[in-house]
Amino acid sequence: MQIGCAPSFEEVVIEHGRAIYKYILSLVKHKELAEDIYQEVLLSAYLAYPSIKEQSKYKSWLFKIAINKCRDYWRKENKSKQFWKEEVYSYSVSFEPSAIPEEEVLHKFSAEQMAERVNLLPEIYRYPIYLYYYQDFSLIEIAKKSNLPMSTVKTRMKRAKERLYPKMKSLA
Image (tube, rainbow, N blue to C red; front, side, top):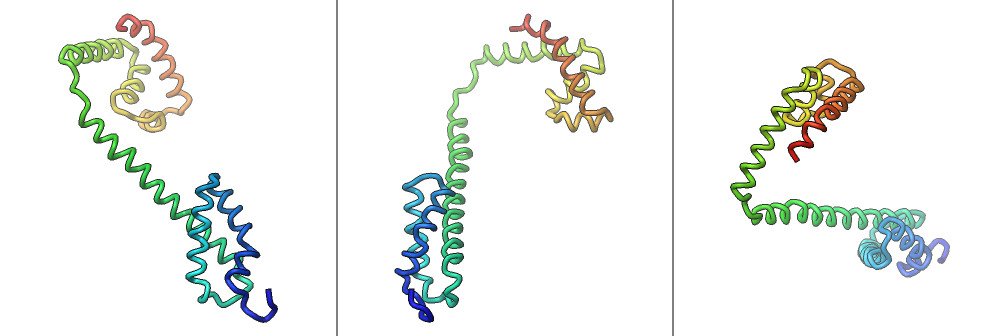
C-alpha cells in the first residue's frame, strides 16, 4: 500500500480478505456458505468503497459488513424454519384423518377413569396434580397459588404420582 494515498480496493482485499473469510467461516461453520457470504461482503464493500474516508477503518468496516451479511443470512434462515414449523405443520394437521369413533369413546372412558383415580388421592396430592395436568399450571405457578415452597410442591407431585402409578397400570 502506498503511504499518504488511498489504497485501491484490490489492495484492501489482499490485505484483509483472508481474515474476513476466516471470520465468516468461524460464524457460519460451513465452507460453501462462508464463500457465498464472503462474495456478498466483497460486492457490498466494492459498491460502497468510494464513500469510506479513513484508511485506518478499512478492516473494521469490512468486518462490520461481514457480520451484517451473516445476520441477514440467519434472519432469512429463521424465517424459513418458522415457515416449516408453522405452515407445514398446520397443513399436515388439517389433513390428518379424524379419530375413529370407537377410539374417541375409549379415550374418553380412560380419561374419566383417570380422573376418578386422581379424585381418590388425599387433598394435598390431588390439588397439585389437578392444577398441573388439568389446568396446565407450571410448578412455579402451583407453588405461588398454594403458598408453598417449590420443593414441597415437587415432593407432593412425586408422591401423588407414586400413589397413582399402581392404579393407572390397571387402565393400560
